[in-house]
Amino acid sequence: MNQPGSSAAPKLGPLSTLIFASRWLQLPLYLGLILAQCVYVFLFMKELWHLIAGANSLTEQLIMLLVLGLIDVVMISNLLVMVIVGGYETFVSRLNLQGHPDQPEWLSHVNASVLKVKLAMAIIGISSIHLLKTFIAIGDLGAPGSKFTEAGVMWQTIIHTIFILSAIGIAWTDKLMAQSVSVSKKH
Image 1 (cartoon, rainbow, N blue to C red):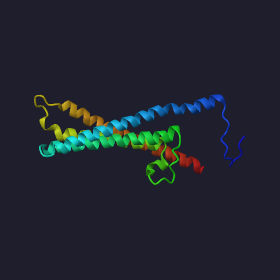
Image 2: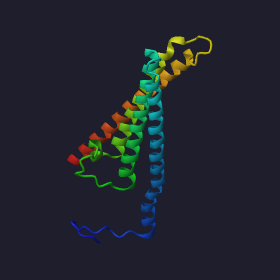
Image 3: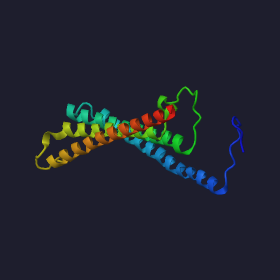
Image 4: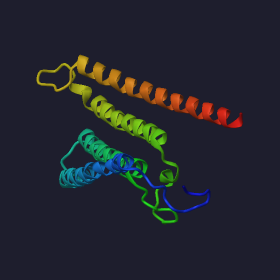
């Protein structure tokens, strides 16, 4: 048995070793998300090229929609980074980035709770961009051949509102849990 202050890892039984090692099954998932990140870089470059190549002929509304599309890709890419880095650090293995000049500030205090709130906020940001794109392009609402319907816009707004309420619920629950932990530590 290890003494307090001892740096040796505790000896695990075979079942405990297997269960603990199973976290490495997530590694291919994170590698797959890195490949998805590469696809988003390609998509960003493709959309950026469309914006630059059409800058002289595009309307202000189309330029705004293309720029919002670029922002959307960046926000989804940021979400991927949070899941890849934060999830790997939280659930698989430490990255040992302490003291590294490029360590993200949020990574020093990441845990499953912080990651949930950050992901919820990123999803709200992405949903906001989609809703803004809809509101900008809504001018042809109800016109024949329009890709927007009143019901579609209404549901998109309702879903966005549910995302916001869900994030508030997650943050509130985490706050209550943190308060109960600090109260129990005082007693």
